Image (cartoon, rainbow, N blue to C red):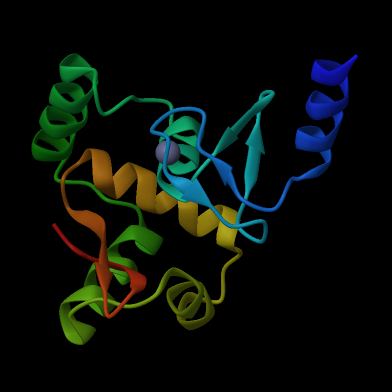
Length: 132
Ligand SMILES: [Zn+2]
């Protein structure tokens, strides 16, 4: 009985959770559920992207594709330009500047990250996107 009660209480205590994948602490606000998992922003972006960073073949393919075709999409090009000019911006600010939805930005960013053109990093306690 005791264990069951504890379990229920823990289930209610849903403020701070850990990412199912990397174990990072996630705030309630930015908690993202993905296919039954709770993922932090990073892992969520990874999960959204078709290629996994731990898959060398996927990174290789993305790299060779980008060299062969020299191609990033129009939006990706704009992202890179902004990152170059600003030295890195917060994701929501970037979405605002591009006038696109966060979901769209995440998709583009995931693609750029796999091409090793852009990456996320922490600056003054804030997460920003900057050039690779
Ligand atoms: Zn994570």
